Length: 265
Image (cartoon, rainbow, N blue to C red):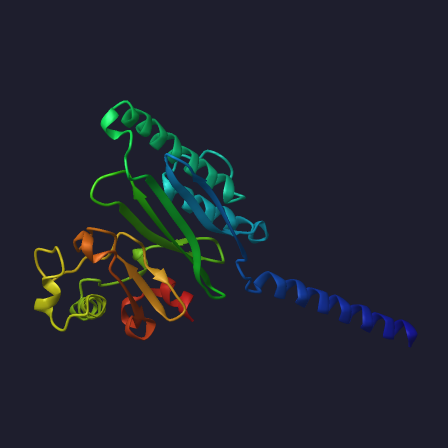
């Protein structure tokens, strides 16, 4: 009797351990981040990079996110991707070095010795959305090197947690469909605060209003819908900034393929 009971207990414990192991492998995890920054402020200009740095606990996904960030910032970093800040330091030093050389050339011209402007390079990488299926990071960078105004880059990336896949526009079907085009137009009208197609057309730099292209920035999955982000001059003049809109998932069902739908369930 004692041996039988012992066998049952051991078997039960083994089953529990197996279940716990299986559960831990499929358990969704949070992509924890630590916000850090690096800055250089002197007579040359103001340079800073602020980033939500994924912790090494997320393993391969951390490397995937950091690799994307490096490619977004120029793709010249040759180190490892386990940490974010070495990447940030590489790019801030690179930009500072280039602008310092340019500043030295300006100093040779006595007319520019007392310039009233400074170089600027202000970048930010931030985790903006997360569910058990995906995590989304957004990136922006403002750079000023003299002239009438600076330039701003805005982009982002959604990653599938299960394997780190970068989600792109391939998960969307029939973007030229009239219904989808009307959804985009509705979102842009809200962004520009206009009421009809004619008013919207006056805000854009497009030859026609029949087909509004998808942005270069890939689709950014959020908790409530897919965010579209257009860069400067992509569809509108500089004064328009970076047009953005979020389309609720409920309006996108027939346009999403199986990969996209699996992320939203």
